[in-house]
Length: 116
Image 1 (cartoon, helix red, strand yellow):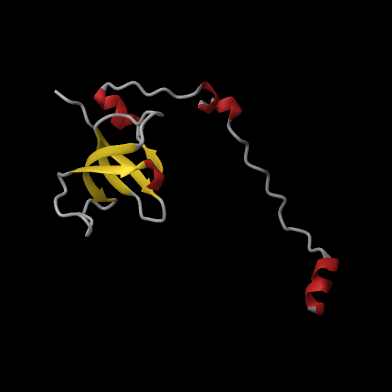
Image 2 (spheres, one colour):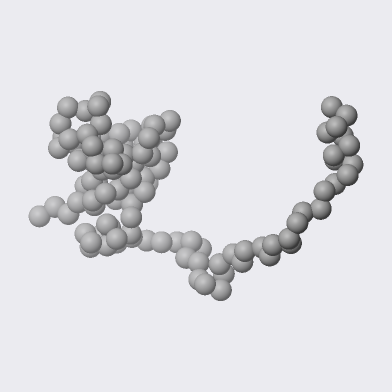
C-alpha cells in the first residue's frame, strides 16, 4: 500500500498556494514534484485542471517552496528530519520588546517634513 502525504501546501511562483497530496517527500536530487488531488486552499477544483484526481508534475523551476505539515507527514510514518538549528526551545524564543509608552517626536524630522 502506497502512503500519501495529505494536505501539503504547494507554493508556486507568482500564484496562489494550492493543496495537494504528495507521493513522497521531495529529495534534493529531484527536478520535479509529483502530486495528486490538486485543489485550491478552500478545497475547490482549480479552473485550469480537468480532473482533480490526475497526477500532476510541477518542475521545481516554478515552485517557491512546499509546505508539509508535520502532522500529515507523521500520519504516514515517513521520517521528517528537522535540523537541530531549526528547533527552538522556550528559553531561546524571542522576547517581545517592552512598550515605551508614547514615542518621542523628533522635532528636526518634523521641520524637514514641513519644509517639503
